[in-house]
Structures are given as structure tokens and as C-alpha cells.
Length: 446
Image (cartoon, rainbow, N blue to C red):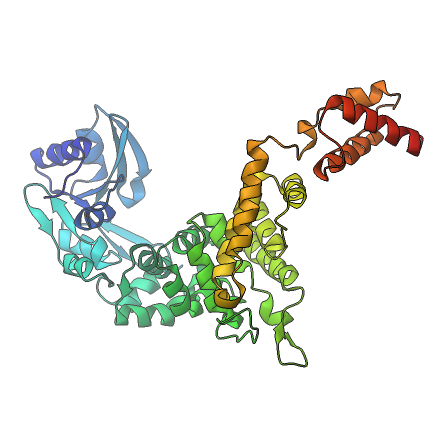
């Protein structure tokens, strides 16, 4: 028995009492079988959309996808999508069906679905209805297409990324026929809207099984991120590194928290290495300037994927500064805070820690160094040390009172004072800062 919400039960009962078939289907059933929590509940029925709207006329209904048979019913602030059994044909864009026809056959509705684990139906009275043995696949942690894999992926190429996403998130293996069809049809991903690709990419990267997925399906990722292919099996020939570039990258992604922007930065951070590889006279490999090339790749790919301005800003900045040293001394951490702010600096430290774990930690472990930086960072906030102009105990009005006319010079003086406070050359007291400001003015004759 699957425990579904009161609202979902009410929808099923209403449809059943009116003489229609109705079932919970898809992710909710899959999650319930796996003993995972679920929020969204999709219901499918042989009732036509007009029948559904009539039956639930006392509730708010939304024509979510009325042409495709989907009506959303709002019950006690709970949105439940109800879709009519349907068949689909002619996917000329390898994404959307050109022909949709409603059917009274549950088996025909099931035959159009993507994977067996998503093609299980549940009704409290009838229990599970499982045409393709999806429950067994769930128990065996296997992702398998419904019917012929090649046909499923040609119908909707986004299913390729969905399969990889489920493998990454759930730790499932992809069945061999399905896997072969993924590689055979992955070129079709070029036809998918970049916004949809980006959404799937974020979810894939945040999966617990991302290392295995990235290494196994690099040819698929290369369709949407071409430079990644050059990273595969690239021997770094450097004592700091015991992994090839792609394996190192996979380890870094795996070791940062499941924050999409952080994992995307981990994916891109060393992408420029193959282009900057040089060997010195001792046969040791170097990658001078790789961060700059990685940044250029990141910018091009993110623009292609049409990411938000916020995501673009955070990811590119993390890639740009991932290799920049932060010395474990208070003044250097203060300067870093002044330049980047606390939120970004903590993200950068997380990336640096993960980058370290993907290297030769037996001989070059930097964990203690990053621990010291983080300890200093925490002390700065505990002691309320100043690292920004707004924290200085002097402002523009104080400078003006010293005879400086309002201009950019005011800001220059304040920045000099802040730098002196950070360097420990003067205390952050108004009296000391005013005295110091007067000396600066007198020396520079503002």
C-alpha cells in the first residue's frame, strides 16, 4: 500500500465514483516503492479533460496543458495534475509529439512512457499495476526504457539526460540496451532547448553518483560541453596530481556540497588545462594560465546554455579565482573578504578543499592550510573585524569636515584608511582614523 495525500485520495475517489479509472503514476509511485519522500503527485485517468473539469467544478482548476490532456485541480492549496490516458506519435523535433490522441486503454498510455520505473500505476483498491516490471527494476537499481530504447530517445532526446540524471541521483545503473541507445542518439541533444539542458545538467551534477556518471558518459556530456572530451585520460605528468584531468574533475565535483553553482564551477575549473599543457626539462607537466582559459570556456558554455545572470556571475568568478592562493594570515583573509565578500569566499574555500582532495593528498595535502584560513575567517566575524568601508568607524562626512570637497577623492581616502586597518597599521576607532585621514590629506595636499 502506498501512502498518498488526502487530496490525492479525494481525486481518485471522485473519478472512481463517477465510473472512471484513475491512478497515481510516475515519480510518486517510484519514490514510495523506494521509501523516499515525495511531494508532487500525478494522476492519470480515462476521463477526458472536460469530464475532469466538470467533476471538479467546485474546485479551482487550471488548464495546465489542456491540449495534452492535463488539468490541474487545486484542493486545499494542493495542486494535483490529472492527465487523460493518451498515445503520442510523430516527434519531428525529437522532443514533442506532433500527434496526441486520447485513449481509454491504460496499457496504451503506459507504452508511451520513458522508463519502467516511471511506468507503474497505483490505485488504493487495485494496488500496483506494472506492465513492464518496473518494480523489479527499482529493486535491482536498474534504469530501463519502456519498449525499444532507440525509439524512446528518438521521440524525446531529453530522455537521454533524464536517464543519466536518475543514475546520478539514485545511484542506479543504466541497462545495456538503454545505454547503447543513449550513445547512439546523444547527438540529438543538440536539438534540445538549452534552458532544458541546463536544468537537467544541474540536477545530474548534484547527484550522489556523479563521479561514475561523468566518467562513463563523457561522450554524452561532450555533445553539450565539447571541451570536456579533451580532459578524458589526459595524464597531467605532475607530482601534485595522481589522476587524469577528467577523473580529477569528477572527484572535485563529488567532494563539493550539492550546490548547483558550486558543482558547475567544479566541472569547469580545469577545462583549460589541456590547452595550456607544457613539459619542463625534467618531464614535469605544467598548466600556466589554465584558469584564464577555463574561464573563457565557462563563459562560452554558460552563455550557450542561457543561464541566469546570477548563475553566470557566481560560476565564472569561482572558476576565475579557484587557483588563487589565500594565505592563512588575518590580513590576507581580510583582503579576500574585502574583494569577494563572505558568501563567495566560503564557496571558494569549499571548491579549494575539493580541488585538494582530487590531487596527490599523500604528499601535498592542504587540508590543514584551509582549516587555518577558515578558522581565521570565523574569528574575523567573531571579533567583528572591519573588511569593508561600511564597517569603518569613519565616513565621507568626516572627510569633508577635514576640508576635502565631495568627490572621488573622498572614496580614495576612505579606501586608504580601510587598507591600513586591514594591514593592522591603525585601529578601527574614529579618533585614530580621523587623525590618520588628516595626515593623508596634508601629505597629498588634497
